[in-house]
Image (tube, rainbow, N blue to C red):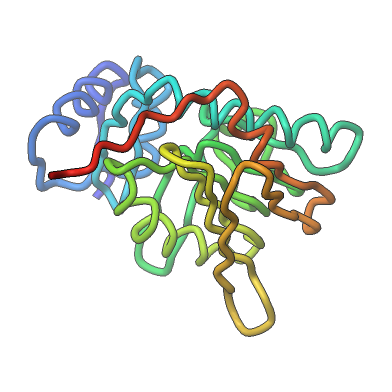
Length: 211
């Protein structure tokens, strides 16, 4: 059922739903209207709204480095990269989702006034222990259902490593890249993602072994 709410009421609903259970689903349109007014970003999964937690400095460095690396390589080409302020819409048979990837490459953009894209070719998420389960399971399943998606990249924030899911004729293959000198090839958009550039200025926390 479509909720008839004013923008102010929608914003209040976003805030309340991010902190307490709410059993009446919100429509995608109401979510988008409220999100345009919200000071904090929220993701939307089948009528439920989730507030996004703040990211660490390393997370932001990695995401910014990845976006900047791709931006330089895509300059003058038909595809373009967007940062984590841009949503991706995932439309499935019985539900709609909106996520904020850390970076996405789009070759067929939506209209200039849309706050989301429908046809990403590459999606990148920077993962940590607090986001790993969502990024590796819920979001992976949703992203891989997008017809245009060719590559989903999961970049570790605690060590120099990346896991890549790449579309093939038989489905998605899993690839692993380890060490700062590794390079993730992205021929789908005529780019390469160098982990040395991705982890520039990133200082990893020492691993404390349990006694």
